Image (cartoon, rainbow, N blue to C red; front, side, top):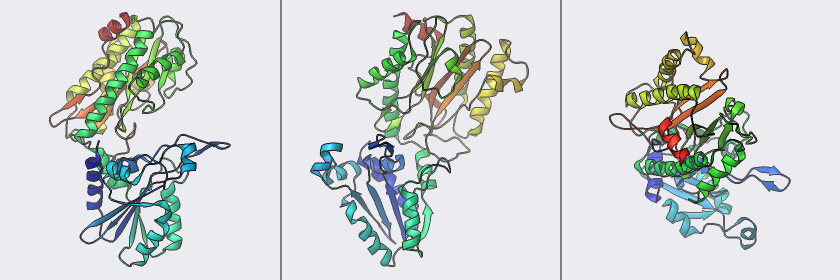
Amino acid sequence: MNSDFYKGNRQKLYESLKPGTVVALFSGHPIRKTADENYPFYASRNFVYMTGIDREQFILLAEKGEYSTKETIFILPSDAYAERWTGRRLKKEEVEQISGIENIRYTSDFDIYLLILMKSGKFNTISLDLYKNDITDIDTEAFIFAEKTKKDYPYINIENVLPQIRKQRTIKEPCEIEAIKEAVKITRDGIVAMMKASKPGMYEYQYRAEFDYALAQHGDMETSFPPIISTGDNNFCIHYYDYNGQAKDGDMILNDVGAKYDYMMNDVSRAFPCNGKFNEKQRMLYTCAYNTSEYMFSIIKPGMPMADVDKIIKEYNFEQLKAIGLCEEFEDISKYMWHGGAHHVGFDCHDIVDPVTTIEAGMVFCVDIGIYCEEWGIGFRLEDNCLVTENGCENLTAAVPRTIEEIEQVMKN
């Protein structure tokens, strides 16, 4: 993505605002881990979506007037001593090149700049990104700023700009789709590396090392999410991160992983026998998941209710499991399918988008078929990324080995 993409995102945002509105978006700050150590900084994805910048303590301020919008970005100044410890800071010209924002000030100017705006009488509303995944989440800068604004400027309305940003992030631009495709290529290399290295006796942390090494060859040092790589009974923990299990001959290796490219993420799940050869029961269950996935990619298209993706996955997979004798009544499906079958991907792995009711062209979401058969000791999922096109859909992750024949061939070489 380039500055035109980020400028376009901001322009759509500004067009949605009423005159007299000020938007303030914050990149965030590092969170304390322990003692004097912080967790690695991770910028607000909505801030990155609007600016292309993932540095800490930056602020985007936009003033929507009657006929135009003025935007200013506030950045940290150069500080030779601080940069010895925490790395080089972006210069003004670099910020402009990345974001396309010409008005650049330092964060030390922000409070007085805001005071002048609020006293001008031209603005009656401040719009903030007031997102929380859970009510127990710590307050971000936006929530702290909202409380301070209520005290300092009680006559100013506080609005939540998040619904508009979610709406924009729902439909991917061509450059976002191309970035996801590049991320998929990197993910494929990581999954293939695990398949080729696999053998009975390997530990989960060794599979993780193979995946991480393959991604590092592309300069990808940060995955979309912590990789889920498990074997044996650990496959029955949906979000498993311990990596201490050891693969036994006959075990299935479950991996739910994703690389990042230019901020765009993907989410891919594959399963393979650690010895390189599917046994009879593994083959039956994997075929059920594969057939269900193929069916879904044959029917997803614009206009289809989003809720139908999960509904039809369960209905179709029920028929598959019934055919091999595992299910009798549809209610039995909950014994083998433990989670939903779709979520959007993009700037977040579980992308923050509109709670859409109808599928539209340009959406990218996962088609995720999980089967967990505890009585057979086999648990896995087959998850691919679906791009909705004008007339149907495309499997963006089809090149990641997914048929039984493809997987066994890769593991044979």
